[in-house]
Image (cartoon, rainbow, N blue to C red; front, side, top):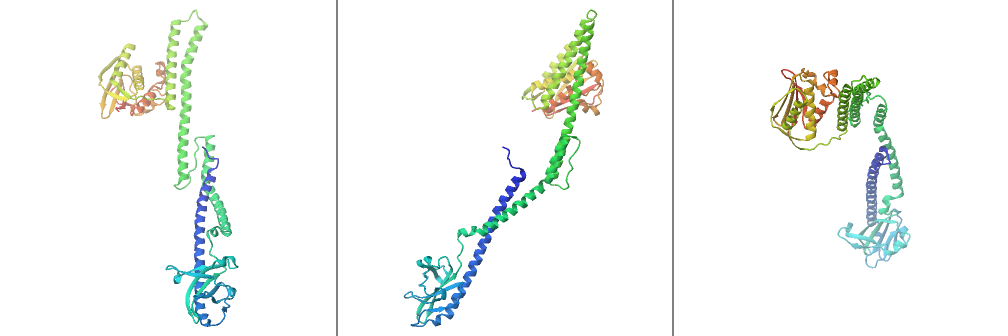
Length: 457
């Protein structure tokens, strides 16, 4: 199913999704680092203040005196609590009238071996949400054993929801918007050469196929795409030219017998009492057979070009096919047909196509032979070789490859008069290629020899 979004939009969404994920991870790491830094700073402050209290306040705690209040300002609040009866002996001024804020529990993993636990009433007082990092320290005083508690005041370590607080969300949103803009512009710039190539191809497709796309410098996907499209345009141009030539040649070939038929019939019809109806019948039959053969060959080539030729695979005795053709030529012509060199050979292939191939070659040979047609077959390594020789005018082997092109003849006028369509050798080469081989003329001492090679299996 085709996506309604453009490639640029899809790439932008993909990259922005990845960037957003990266930004979320980075912001989480930054936030975690900030929390760790804040926690470390607050811990250092609390530890230092606790040491200060132990050093400066402890000597002021004497028997029978009231609670010692020291005026140190936040961010730290301190209480010194009697370990025996949990009365407050000293405290910071901002918690001077409060009962013990916390108690402790022993822990081997906690600093100083003590875990500070806030008392329940704290969460119902103005201290709720204000007490952060805490430390406890057992100290001796003139009035007996005590425990000093210190809390960072006015700062609470952010919980899980703090990571996605308002500031973080706003910052993340701005970063994503900037990423969307940058990626959109970058993808657009990266795709600009491709869009230029697309417009150029669209212009060429509706105009002159001989034009080509300028290939950008470098060896990247854009330049390789331009090279590939130029190769495709070359093939399209070649195919279009071949199609035009094919249509032109087919029209010309069809026009010739039709013109002959119409002229013969019109001439006979104008003076019927003087017409040689036997000759008229012979001309009509001959030209009708030419038309039938031409239409058949054209239809076969059209199916071949469209991939509509289906091949069967079975064992075919090529020597039997050659012997059948030898008998047919002997019956239909006065030529001497020599099949003494036909050896038993087999191939795996399509019987119908192979018979058509041999028929085309033998008809072509008998058409140009003076008196003799020779057939030969044998194995050579992994191939079956078929050779058909006629003692007519020799073909220029060096330039004979063109004879396998469509509508090409050695002698156009003579071939037309003898019934050829100019497509027989084209079909021969196509069938041989379908059987893993090929066809071509080879040198001979006299006359012309056509050699066909087929893969045995």
